[in-house]
Length: 387
Ligand SMILES: Cc1cc2nc3c(=O)[nH]c(=O)nc-3n(C[C@H](O)[C@H](O)[C@H](O)COP(=O)(O)OP(=O)(O)OC[C@H]3O[C@@H](n4cnc5c(N)ncnc54)[C@H](O)[C@@H]3O)c2cc1C
Image 1 (spheres, rainbow, N blue to C red):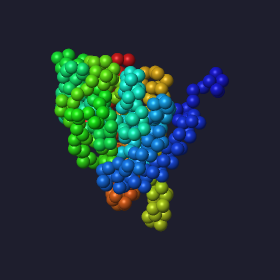
Image 2: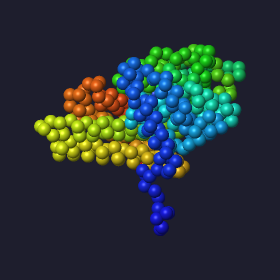
Image 3: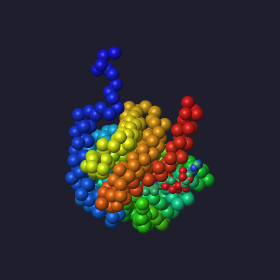
Image 4: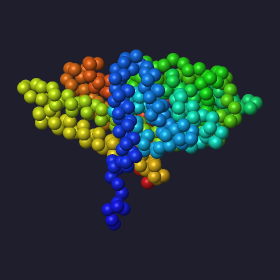
């Protein structure tokens, strides 16, 4: 086979991807980096960061340009989430949920009218949220209790959603509710609802351990009317939409965790080269070198699993097992790298004077959202046993 027909290495980027990555990196360094500590302390996203994300086209990466988006690819989204998370995983998750879950839901399932009505605002003005989880239904997501009561012209939503990422900033919500609980999960339906809808209230924000600048709120639905035109896809097919989106969304979370691990490793390397003990930089000790080398192995393997899943998804090939592996592995790597990176800083790592402490806190969520680690293992086991 000639060299030109050989598949490219997974980490090889096209010129376009490479340029895009550089511009996102510059933006993250220039606009996000100076605000990371303050946003973490205040548990608030800086308005300049959100504005910049929209201006850079990062809130509608796959949305066609005529609808206000950047018209780019899924892999490009993965690169963006990784680069932003290298600087701040809290901003990374905002971009991830927006693109791989909310936008993806609309791009795949909205009809033409819905695309014209919802996508431009989402891509250029206000982010969106994905509302599946409730207090009683997390891993068992389809046990949701939120109801959509059929009424003249549409439905009335009743219930309470939890853990809604981006809810404080969001202008549009993709909400899952059951139109017919007797049909079990086959009654679950997805609705697109605007923030201004009467009966929809964004509740309190959680006070979290990590990714504090990312808002996570309750959503209260008190007889909120939604017209038939706001049903996304078909009535009773919401469970399929949710499964599909979460399978894909996991790749984005994997990218967030790879970015986090890279950020932590870079900080640790720089510190190890400059901090001196016993009259020489701590990086000159072989024990420290091996430790740092192991972290580099971790980052590389996590990145390869994430890129592989993303490239498979983009090529239209099966990717569910690979996505679960990527998210599972990247979440372990992020926790390990962030933890060791903190130790490289010694006592300084335990303070808020250095970024290691924040990345350590941020890493924990990787094993929990968009399916806990056990849920990823369940998916992987089901698929390998069926193979
Ligand atoms: C910061 C944050 C942001 C989030 N953002 C969103 C969002 O935007 N939209 C949204 O819909 N949801 C969101 N979530 C919800 C998230 O997806 C759930 O928290 C997650 O799926 C776990 O559900 P749970 O919290 O109810 O835990 P549970 O499901 O109660 O799990 C508790 C423990 O039991 C284990 N467990 C459960 N079932 C089994 C089993 N069968 N076998 C073995 N172990 C099991 C789990 O692995 C876990 O360790 C978010 C959560 C957080 C913390």
